[in-house]
Amino acid sequence: MEQYIIKGGNPLVGEVVIGGAKNAALPILAAAVMTDGTCTIENMPDVRDTNVLLQAMEGIGATVNRLGKHEVVISGSGMNVDCDVDNEYIRKIRASYYLIGALLGKYKRARVALPGGCEIGSRPIDQHIKGFKALGATIEIENGMITATADELIGCHIYMDVVSVGATINVMMAAALAKGNTTIENVAKEPHVVDVANFLNSMGASIRGAGTDVIKIKGVEKLGNCEYSIIPDQIEAGTFMTAAVATKGDITIKNVIPKHLEAISAKLEEIGAQVDEFDDAVRVVATKRLDSTQIKTLPYPGFPTDMQPQMAVSLALSNGTSIVSESIFENRFRYVDELTKMGARIQVDGRTAIITGVKLFTGADVSAPDLRAGAALVIAGLAADGYTTVSDIGYIYRGYEGFEKKIQNLGGDIQLVNSEKEIARFKLRIV
Image 1 (cartoon, rainbow, N blue to C red):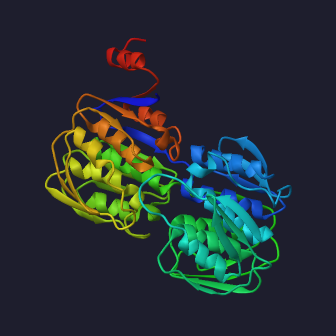
Image 2 (image 1 turned 45 degrees about the vertical axis):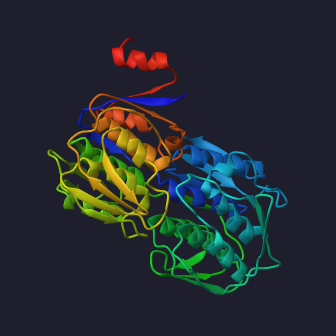
Image 3 (image 1 turned 120 degrees about the vertical axis):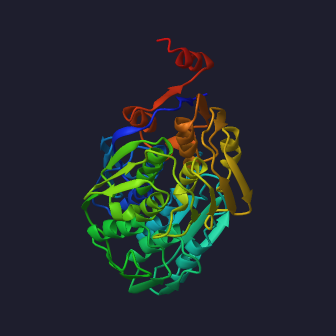
């Protein structure tokens, strides 16, 4: 029964170092099997999703050599092309589908379990399939598996019907080893899309335009060795930025790319927080109760959906009424019932939440419904009066490394516990 127990009321103050971006690491790890050489990948986050993916890659014959918690050397030279990517763990992470593009590009065959992930809403893979078919692949879905095969992949023009990060990356990987030129329009522009393109280029791919609306790819015959360092995690950084605001703290967040945080920084400044940018750090300070605002989640460079729950916690403690509109995932507001237990005043109508700020939360027993909502509930507990327990924290481990330790280093009173006895000891401070 792993849980967090939190005694709220302490402002978070100090410095925190941000790890590698989970959303970049997962496709980069998958893409590493596209070469028979070796890829050395640094700044890899040591979180549950990356570890599950690495285990799945080993299961189909990839060589995975962990040089440390944050560095790995991968080679796809010994892979079994006829082996299925399927186990109970790989079905639980969304990133399993990146192995389709990687294996289809390299071997012209992939058979991978349909992806899982947090239940935050419908995340169809129709745009992935559309792109693979346009390149010449045949797709079959049966028994919870997706099979993609092709005699050869031929470059072409692809227009994405909707902006999809996963489909952009997946089709880009397959097209990197297709014959001829591929143009993909209406693509996602997120920083991790750019990071995957840069990684593939470091292996010898020819990809231009990542970060814009159009990506152009000149197919190459094979990819080679590389050394690469993953970008910092903008969502982990944003989580600590909102934690500073909610707890009326002062946090310097290091190892970040401030440009990637502009949408978050702008909203925090809009409600009255102080945000100072440096070359590779941001400092967020809030000394008083802040103001309300309106937020609509959008693809990058808009406000990220993965930051919506954390920001909602800050707004639920602000003056006035805020409106949060969720345009990406229809089930992103599953945390609202839990936050209401702590005294938040939030009404949800479809994909819109109307948040009336309160002065203070009170501690309660809450359960994390998904990864980002779990982090948001921890922030709420840190800002609340009294004790909060957060259960189902396995979701949080999927995307945050050493979460409670980083909070403790900032002065947050939080502990990982496994029993009611440990919770009682925490409250009584019996060592």
